[in-house]
Picture 1 (cartoon, rainbow, N blue to C red):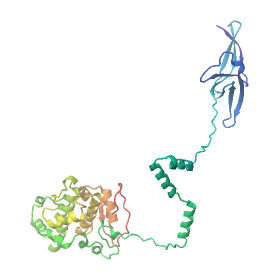
Picture 2: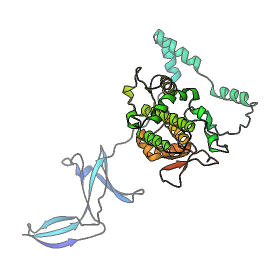
Picture 3: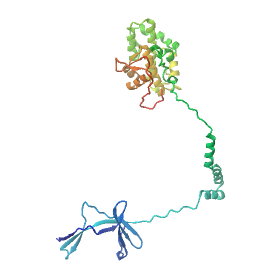
Picture 4: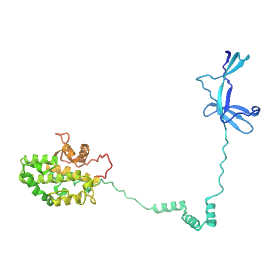
Length: 365
């Protein structure tokens, strides 16, 4: 085995290079010229090699993490001499072609089309020329036209929330709770009175379960029956709760079952007609109509229960998230109850309107 007799480490190291896509032909090594340059942008050494036909260049690999050595055999392979070297792979340096501008102009193309083109091409070219305008002249004309136009200052006005077709009309300046929402604005009294017969049957019956009411409505009627209310007030509240029952049932009905034969109220044709006219659009129930329905349910329930309401059971019956029904309640002017975390109440004066916080995009209420 040969022995290493000498190791040469020098800053001016020789460079071993090869060509990326070929080799030096025989007897061509005498015709090449070599130079080392410094790239100012990268501060790296670049090797340049040129022959009579091509110029090659490559970055010299000067890795300081390890040494590269060229082994030179001496004395018939018995001794080795190691010389530190750098390496480089050369690639052809291709000259960029000079970009020349075409002598053909759009006007030249247009002239050619008019002289040698088809009838369609000629007609199209002439139309394009007629449509060509001088933008400077147009700009000057517009500036002269608007020079004498004065725009009055228009004060921004907050839109009146009572113009909404989805929220019930509200009087935030009311001095009493009864004046905030008018029952006649929610449902015409004559239509509500069509539920009187059913309400009387309900109040006189001992088997309220037989009426198949919504659980929340059923519990509320039981509570009212045991309260010291006079008959007229009790009957009025019972009619409101029956109407709420119809609205909740309408909200929970799957869309595929809402057909022409669908009936929203089995015990009053007037209620059925009223719901279809006010809570449906062209025989369908879009999402904004469900929102309207929920708004009216909350307000009617507050009127029926003397402006104190627990939203938790109502949200379950209406199949609406508790946070959503709370947002609707705040927007309708109700405040959180101090007695119950999920309860709401009506305070005088009514709080200012708040913006809705809906997760999915909806038409505004």
